[in-house]
Image 1 (tube, rainbow, N blue to C red):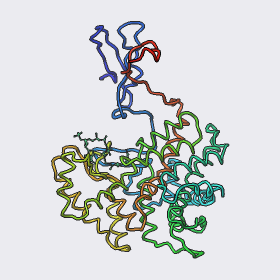
Image 2: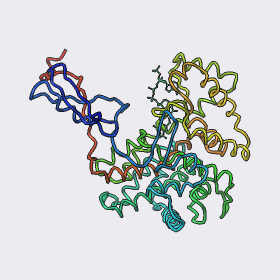
Image 3: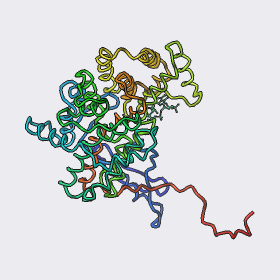
Length: 431
Ligand code: SDX
């Protein structure tokens, strides 16, 4: 029976070392024993951007990038998108099992009754200029919640953790909607406990001058499916940020605010906004070949935004579902004229050697923005629409990290490439 170990020969010393292989990995710390002398620090692994480094064990989300598989707690994303609801998927991610009817009702009641924010949050948000990007408002306001819930520092206390996690899930749509209303110069709309999670969000965005708001069922369902698709995605950049910041035992509001900052970047959740700007820049389907050429020649460092993925080296399974949702939304809103450009971009790119060789295909952000725009959201709100559902993934991953006995404060090493030791030079002696 072959041994689950790696035998390493250090050719500098001729010594060999046997390192156990666990879960398809070796513990990089096992390399420290490989030294050339007693005072040698020992070997480290070097992996900028963590291309091939597992920083945790997790039971929440499974992705197979080659096969285009995405599962939440073992359930395929396609089945959840078709048969479940966002609030039920939130329960599943948080608790590891699908809820019974009673559990779902209780969870929905809990979230619904935590949607309000302290009145001072409005004053805090009013401090922003009218044209502040809503992601900037979201990250700072979520960080500010840390000052409203000092008990959140008790991260070792399960009851306190769960209350904060519920507050974050429940209040994210409220803060998101407030940031939108602020940017439009409109009064804030308070949450309506009679509406669904998504319906309440749409009402807080759209309600003007009426006491009730009739949410269009197709749009409500479409956004609910989009929220399911965006709820978690294992160790992406923003989740890694939440885990890293959370590893210092800071409260979850501060950790999630860091995640929002990471998601804001155009290479991550900001990509859906960047896709729309790209499609508008292209302007017409006849301009697609020139744009593709510019991307391939690296002209202006253009990227095909919404394409490519660190893990998916085949079609992002979420993009397939989003394309179906897009058709349903356009039935109601009318087809987004930019769709024709997007479809042509995808068609050409999937046949072009440059993209095929690099295994670049549409990711979750390629089509989602077209839906958001058709639903009347400004592009600046697109990453906010990503952050709302991803809050469930962030808090679930954060709690898993807090409870993981193998985890401690994240503090990587470095390869020092700076100046060797040297003495201070007095000003008069400097050239
Ligand atoms: C999300 O990690 C997650 O799970 C994220 C996410 C989630 O749910 O949390 O799935 C959400 O962030 C989706 C990704 C959204 N970002 C974009 O659509 C921005 C455009 N995509 C790229 O920036 C890029 O594909 C990344 C950032 C997504 C992935 O980058 P990698 O894994 O670091 O790959 P790379 O940049 O090393 O690219 C490999 C090659 C390079 O070419 P060469 O240097 O080998 O010649 O592919 C090229 C890149 O230049 N390339 C692209 C490209 N993406 C990669 N070329 C043109 N257009 C692109 N979009």
